[in-house]
Image (cartoon, rainbow, N blue to C red):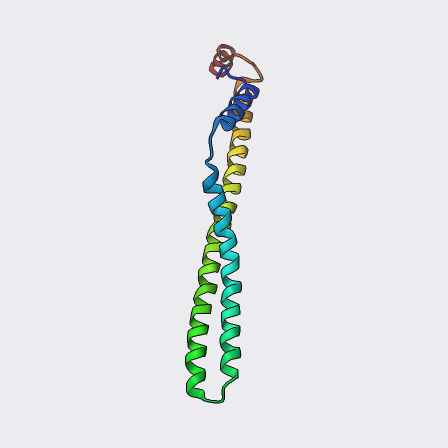
Amino acid sequence: MSEQPADRVDRLQGDVQDLHVPEPSADREAMLLRVGMALPVIGLLLIGVAWFRASGTAIVADQIPMLISGALVGLGLILAGAAIWIRFSIARLLRVWLARDLIERQRQTDQLVTALTGGHSSGAEAQTTVSD
């Protein structure tokens, strides 16, 4: 209890600066987020190409395989891309939420310590104030 909130903030900031976050992981996540956005576009293009090729022939027996193959692959790409994009978007949102929650809890803890110590700076004074 002898540590001031300002000292704790300085110590936390120093610890965060000393923390090593590997860059390849962040780069890979950004790349996968871009892939998640590109796959649905590619899937829609495949569906469009399959429809265009199928519309160019009058024989239904030729149209059905083109539509099925293009549509299924395109739909699979759309679903895979959407799943990847949603996964990394939710992960980013949860990281922001967790950081905000951590800061809020730290602020509440600082307020609680200040209230319990009565604004005193040393732990010995805090013990006498709390025990009285």
